Image (cartoon, rainbow, N blue to C red):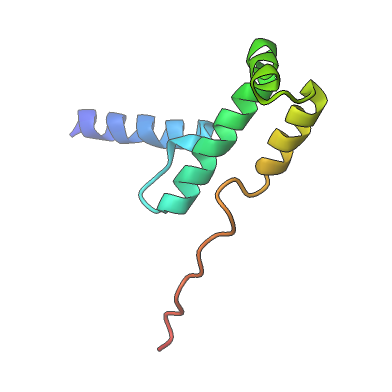
Length: 87
């Protein structure tokens, strides 16, 4: 019993510390949005990767940075409409 409580408290700690780890109520859309934002943040944070993308797309680094920041707002489009529970 003690091991189970310890594991659950560790999982709760991870969920509170790292937003992207998800939980039981995480929808597919929320998980995908978090994954895309993590990828874009990594691309913005690593200078060499940003240079690589700028060269590959033949764009300026500032334009690539701007596009990535724009994509971080809604990387997977608007969230899906949830059906009403009152039917």
